[in-house]
Image (cartoon, helix red, strand yellow):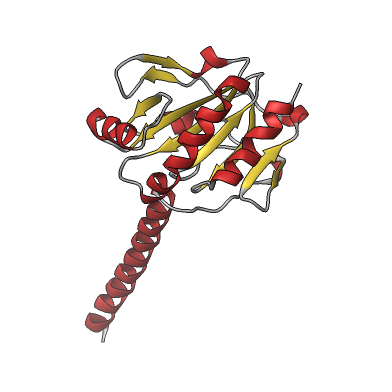
Length: 204
């Protein structure tokens, strides 16, 4: 009897391990590219908008982290250089279907708001070669630069409890004081992107 029990326990353990591995893989797939879902603890103090854009009161915003490095075209790029402007930071990858879908919206709104003190920037992630990113930018006529971040290290710099990027695509809005003001997880329609940008343009 004892000889039969050991295999049963091993099989059960294997099943648990396989289920756990499957759940982890599914979570990674969702976080890598998809609509995602907003969330956070009581410490985040953000308001979840019906349009998928989460916002933070001006008095409760946290400073954006240091985000700098090489752009997809090989130039130096530092988000801090745009302090004094509203910065819309889009996390994207050329391989990501939702990123492709939202690209025309970002290009259009970026062009229309650049004279209103708004600077769009990108963080390109999980592309192994810069050529993949630049081909995407050329095809979709992206009018603004992006940091090249193949390993996703820049996404990890956002402070705990802040509105941080949790999937690809994600969009972070940074106010003129360099603080995180809003976030969207998943692709943004043109109207929703405008609703994210316009209140920050109007801020004094």
